[in-house]
Length: 372
Image (cartoon, rainbow, N blue to C red; front, top):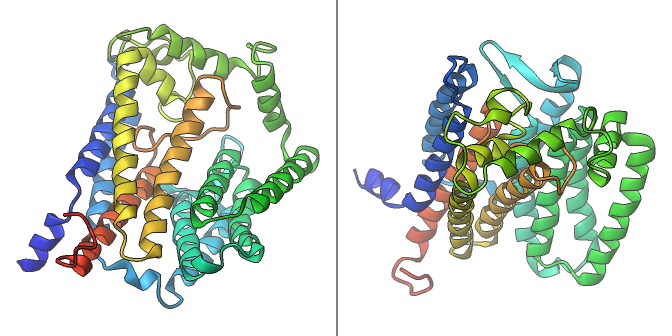
């Protein structure tokens, strides 16, 4: 009984409530009145599974991740899955990125993001005072580059961008020097030039060129971005009403349950609804950073920050893509978009942060080191 009181007493209800409201809003946006609600029905099951996963994730004591070699073995396991999916994975829309497992599919690139956060949190926490040494930037970058390379080969440029954002954000938080930041920037330019000449597929180049000239080919490569901006703008102040989004429900806007769900939401809920959406994501990030500040060690702090960076990267890149500020890359938005792998990963991340906050409170209660 004491364990249960400690377990449920440590739950951050602000964070949990915001997460479930966002998930519910995504579910409502997927609903249609014509009876074609396969995405809606499948997402209900994924929400149930993800909720169970988060509940289980709240129970363990994750201090074992910052001690010993467990985190490294998990990292090797995710590398193995990313390699395996290139040989036996299912190909969907040109990307060989998922395993078809009976009644559901699993994209290893989603849990890979959480694994990368744990690896970087452990690496930087052990070398926090020496982070000014550029070799630690290189080593942490190598850990990241292995995952990014395997994800990019699939090809999944959107997830590769998210993974890079997580590494870059955690490096900044860990304390990179500005001259090192300049070197990283130059390396980034060199890598991009190399990818443009030898790595990017033709359709990926077309998306970037469409981003630079959005109206150049609105019937071809620029169609999705053009329809997305129309959907966002047509929502105006109060939106067209739930289920009455013409761009999404009439299929002018493709993939509105996943890649363009923000545009579909903005069309139906309008500026007021988008403001509410930003507020809810703001609460999620605020609570994650709150737990980061209260972390028992640098590992817990960096892990919570990493999860916050993961959510912010998804959110900002997705919205930028939907309103024409970034190239279309096929990224989801946390908790809102359809999909089981990313939803389960996000719920697990939230559960792990809450679990770490539980033993943080236990460790420092009565020591006047943390606010009550």
